[in-house]
Image 1 (cartoon, rainbow over the protein chains, first blue to last red):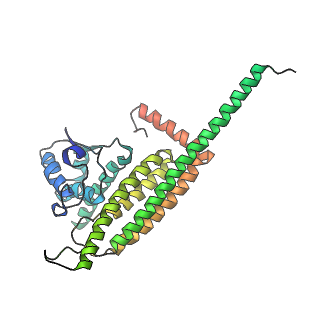
Image 2: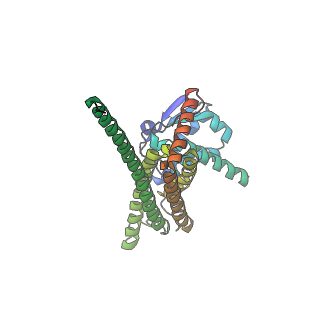
Image 3: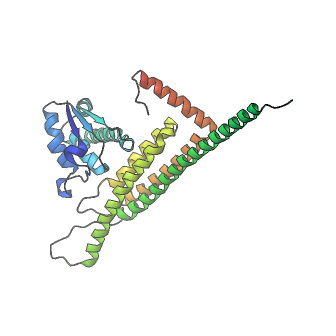
Length: 111
Length: 187
């Protein structure tokens, strides 16, 4: 299992959707950190603690974008687990899974 | 019947301890309710910020030599609003975490779902260089904020009533039992 500490390995202040929005955006996290590991079949543990905040735009692009990149909801649930010990961040794992589910639903309706 | 000095002392100590415990419990309850009120205040302030933000069109600078002072000022205000909204989101998250554990589980779950929608409205598509005005997000900011505030207040008042407190103790005991056998994360 690979552990990615979002605050230490990526940024304590993630934000924005696309690379054009500025550094530490969702697209960058997805394409440079998540997709390569997932394509190798690795299991990921993503630690959310110490992040200052998680804008919805970042979460949706980073994780909902995995569905648009071709991963299935079932495989993402199997391969990714989240750690959030900090009380103010504890609601984010469920929120991330909700965005993945919504993206999967949208893709199904469009396809 | 003569009263022993020891009986007087024991009675005084017991009386002081029970009055003190009751006062301490009331003080903790007031602190907790104050956190809920602070949460409601910040949600309302964030909704106002979001409404003004989403009703303005965001345009990127057309060319380096652009000298439209009004457009520049508007862009600057919007960027400032984005930072403020993100700060509000972080503060709201922290306040929510500070009181949610004391709520009834059903109320807590309802609040979490509404808060998820509100977070999306606050920070879903800013940081983009250009976007039209979005009346839907502005409307959602107000309606979800009102929903959050009403739900948080009524859940808090239920939680501090005596039946609510007993229910909280039962739910907490059940969660601890389940956590002990590894079936449920303890809150």
